[in-house]
Length: 514
Image 1 (cartoon, rainbow, N blue to C red):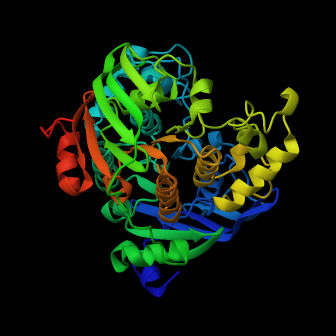
Image 2: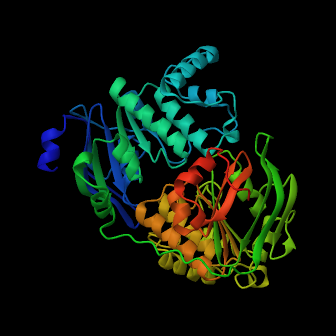
Image 3: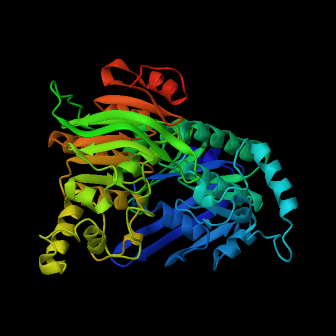
């Protein structure tokens, strides 16, 4: 600990000493120390694969360290399971969902609650949860089934579940990764209230430096499983934090907008679709994406972006309208036929939709090649060829993995995202639909993914980028637009818009018709 931090920090309420943890082929944590003062937000920064989630899982009793000790309010503790951590007042909101999709929000909140033994008093629980929501300015339909919620709403259910359990130390692993900008502001206000008004201690894992600067007092930076720095947030700069995280400068290639766009690759005409609640969420959308062009679509979650991506990929039926790929009507074609025609899809849910956790990386790569005669001669999968391709993807896309046969569930979120992107781009798609491709990624991984989108464009692919990150939209797009209530507010050349204007379009302010 630096002398400045040591002088200013209160006594730690939660501390980890010399934590070491190894998995097959990987040392995830190497003698890591962490100190969290009571009644503050302590941020944990680091690249994907730096060991942040592993450390949090140890603090919560999900996994056990190979070496090292944990201390709670000065006393050594050993959590055999999350039940022990919860009993000690420590709760955790995971980056991946831990909810029951078929149950309602209220049922998920009371499930496993410490006071839920015996007969459930759902009416009383509803009153308590509604008071909790009002206290922190959260709006969630308690009667909705979890499978009907957006990713942002599911994240709020996870947070409310921990708060409803009455924890005094709250671990948040990438809590803003699935939240829209307005939802992030609600979360930040809630965190300030938790700490300043209610005295809760928060351990915040995030890649977003503005979030750290908005709420955290101290920060621990992990790099390659070791502590790279322990700092007071107000005493450092964003540049210094990135340097500690990455260890080098991070740059992104400049956008080169073509003077003469190529022929139309994707043509969408008056497209409409229903969401999972049976409501019309995409309303008569029309646009074109050309060869060698990136079209960036912004929007607040729930305004039709997910439905647009899924209809284009063939995962959701169109209610009306037409979709043409290279001049062919694919509106009612199955997903496999679209892949064969040259469509590539990177879904927002990399763990739930884009990959199979229990399968190896080779098998996950095969998900995009099982129909390819080159990889399936005489109908049998050529595993040697598939392994060679997987190794090539791991090397080209800088996926950190001990070997190509490790299960996908053992990769960090960023490395899994790079594997999925590499698997899709290795087929050289004519059209790439990328939905939230850098969600939850660290600075370097996000820059790498954006560079891959630009390279795909340079090879002549048409790219549809659907993102809630306006910096990302403006970093790579040739044309930018925004969806609001299922319709395009505007779709214009990048030079004719700015982030403030597009942000207003996302909120429903009138723009130029698409």
